[in-house]
Amino acid sequence: MRAFWIGLQFLTRIHLFRQTEWTEEDFGKSVSWFPVIGMVIGLILCGIYFLMRPLEAPYLTAFLLVAGEFLVTGAMHADGLMDTSDGLFSGRSRERMLEIMKDSCVGSFGLLAFVFLVLMKTMALAEAGGPLYLLLFAMPVIGRMNMVVSICEYPYARPYGIGKAFAAYRSRHAVLWALAAALLPALYFGPAYLILAGAGLLTGLGLNRWIVGKIGGTTGDTYGFVTEVSELVLALCFVVLCRGNVWFM
Image 1 (cartoon, helix red, strand yellow):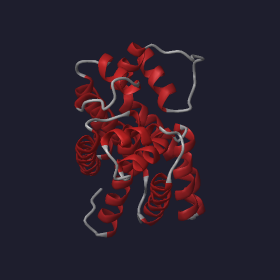
Image 2 (cartoon, rainbow, N blue to C red):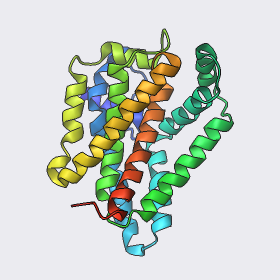
Image 3 (cartoon, rainbow, N blue to C red):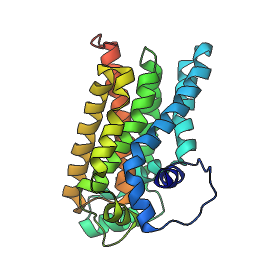
């Protein structure tokens, strides 16, 4: 369980134990727990939705859900989204892209990516037209499952970095254990969850392949990019399925 608590403290602002130093091995062992940590985030989002739903204020509820996830995670994935967008959409060489991504300043592409993400996710949650519990649980779980795939199945673009530590010390069967955990909610939500999970995982694979083609590997920033975009795609798929009358519960 030590690996779970370390992963929870790293990926969220939930600090149940006072610990400020981790070894690279600690980081690596926590990878298998990422989808479970996504479940914790999902439960918090479902709690917010449960409290707001009686007010029948869809846009306010949707905005609070988006803001709530940023607060729980410390917006670390959104930071990765912005840095990655600045680098990958700059049209520069691979080396220059990596330099731009490492720069702490946010550029125009990063700002636009963040604004579009917040607006599109808020509108998708508000316009879904059905109970959001399934979506609110699936988004953080599948998003963090894609992070596991990014870490374990693709090369790291830099010679060193936190992602390198994750990949070097993760369990040999990290992807299998994480996938089993990520698909576990289907026992409660049924086939509908599997449809969203499939869409999210395919999105993650496509994004990672595109990223590797641009910079030769993944980085900590691209983990956040893949997570955030995957969650947005899940939200949009949920709207299409609900509004298109092809959804089944």
